[in-house]
Amino acid sequence: MPSAADGTRGGAKIMFEVYREGGYDRRFRVVYFTELNDHNRGHELDRCLAGESFLSGYLAETSRKEARAVIGGALKRLNDGDPLTPQGLAAELEPHLA
Image (cartoon, rainbow, N blue to C red; front, side, top):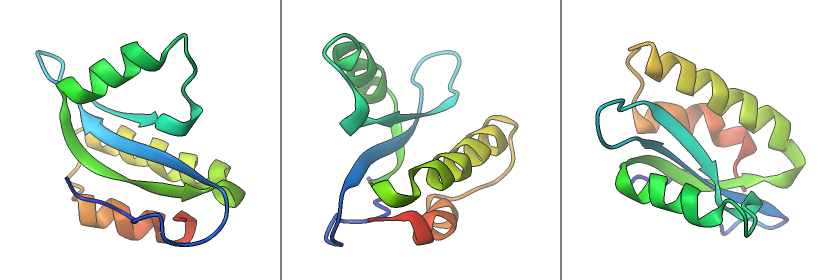
């Protein structure tokens, strides 16, 4: 599984994974593990585990909004069929990684 960061930088962080759904739809999605609650944890983890990992890592809490915008834009591009590699997305996220 490609990783954008190993979580060794200091400060609060948010663990995430960008994945491609298994099954018919095959859309790219993201899950922010550290923001799941008891109500949605099982469902979101099952969806993620049933898919293909694209990129995972840790986002710095201090730039959470900016990182989410980068990931949201990347998901749109990926789901529209634009070519983007895990390394390309990791490079875009570099300023926001923990």
